[in-house]
Structure formats: C-alpha cells, structure tokens
Image 1 (spheres, rainbow, N blue to C red):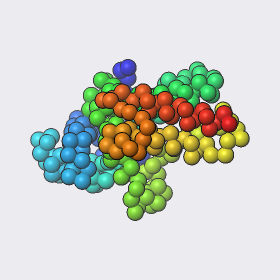
Image 2: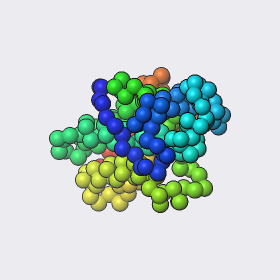
Image 3: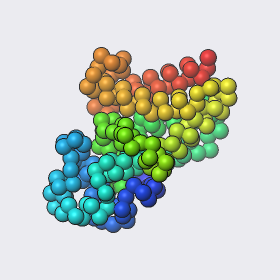
Length: 225
C-alpha cells in the first residue's frame, strides 16, 4: 500500500519540523537506520552527522537531543498506526470486526510504505520493539506527559479503548486492554527474538502471524466472558 501523507506531531518534539525540509527528512531517514544498526546507547548526533555527511550543528537545529529524536520517531510510528487504523476500519460498523482489523493493522503497520521515502517503517518498527519504551520509561515522564509529548500514543489508546467499550460496555478496563495490546505485540516479538522462554509465540523474519493470533485470542476471550 502506497500512501502519501504528512504525519502531524506535537511541535514541542522538535525545534524545526524535519518533515518540511530535505535536510530534516535526511536526518529522520539516517537516524532510523543508524539507531537500528548500533542501538540507542551508542547513537549520538556526531555519528549521525558523519553517517549523513553533514554536521552536528545541522542536526541540533532540528532536535534538542537524542531523547527528543527518539520520542519523535516513536510518536511518528504511533500516529502512522492510528492513520492506518482509520483507513482500514472506514465504513466498518461492527465493532468486533473493527477490533479484529485494528489488531491486524497493529501487526502489519511495519510494512514499508514506499511513498514516504525517508521513513522505512519496517526498520522503524524494529526500533519501536527494541528501543521504544525508552521514550517514556524515564524520570521526566510526568513533565513530558503534561507537555503533551505522548499525545499520539494516548489518542491511539483512546481510539482503541472506544472500540473495546462498544463491544462490551460493561468491561471495566478498556484503556488497559488497549495499551496492553500494543505493549504485548512489541514485547512478545522481542521475547520471541531474544528471550524465547518468556513467550509461546514464534517469529521468523517479519512474519508476525503468531503474534496477531495471540492478540486476537486474548482480546476476544476477555471481552466475551
């Protein structure tokens, strides 16, 4: 699926919107590739600048530090997932069918969209799995949440929680289930790849079929009790 879109993100995440310029898009493209290659701990703007044949100063014109860059990438991904959910559930009235599609979309959102040349979604997905929680498992999370930096994730959770409540209006934990679907998907892909004794699913390459099956099982067995 090829879709030309501009992702809307909180202005506090960046100093200058990287989507608006060729240099900014280059920063996003190469930061995704470099973080995937060497990990967030080893990543810095000096290495990024060298990778993209530019200067550290040029990167700092767009992002205050690498934490804000990671938060930008994570927010970009969750807004992309939200966009795909809206697209894929359009004109679907049955909430059970919508939740099934939402879970399918959550797992398949990592497929690359070639029209967004500067974002490789499949590589970004690997970063979400391995590094994504570092964007909000930090001391400053409360302050950053008040600033609205996690708005994209919060809105996505709210959207899915609404569908869950449509299926079962008496279910007391719609937001818990919504966020657990997202976190379970990423955690169990990670476990399957690195800590296999912590999960019962198997992942080969980018085939996440067993993860989708697991999410469908948990969601509908809980809601149909």
